[in-house]
Image 1 (cartoon, rainbow, N blue to C red):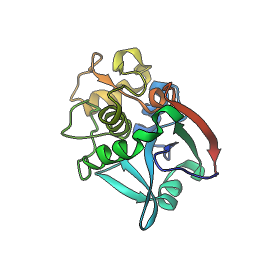
Image 2: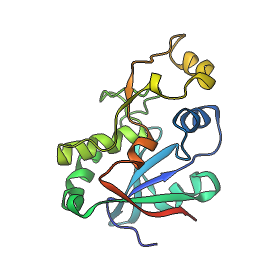
Image 3: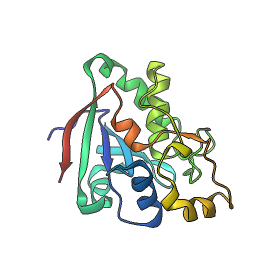
Amino acid sequence: MVLQDGDILFQSLPHSELVDAIEGATDSPYSHCGIAHLTDHGWVVFEAIGPVKETALAVWIDQGRRSRYSVYRLREAYRERIPAMIAAAYKYKGRPYDIHYEMDDKKIYCSELIYKAFKKATGEELGQIVKLGSLNWGPHEHLIAAIEHGRIPVERPMITPRALSEAKQLELVARDVR
């Protein structure tokens, strides 16, 4: 499997209450994603996990469940915009992780980083924004209520890893790579 600059990588993080809620509410094997980027120091994944940062590809792969990941690539018509997408993503470097999954720029979560970088580079949406209430959030109500101080923001718009992976601008290159 040969990566290309700007490939979007998806993985399942080790089980935790939050990871299980993300995967369960979205009915998806993916709980995390990032942008592959070739730097002078080798391959990194630009991601929002803790602060928005570069993570060495090997470290990123190892943080996933069973060290497996999937690779999606922008379709040919969008590849010339990859440098602009990567530059847009790097403008969020250092921002804290958004545990509330809000679509503002104060804090950033993984799929939001990719969505916003693509939108700034192309003017198009990557994947479909959904509201929390449209997801299967019920089994995870206790966790959501704890994070949100007792309320469930069912009208909150968000972009999920699953919604990104289903974007018409992406094509699957490799699934479940190890």
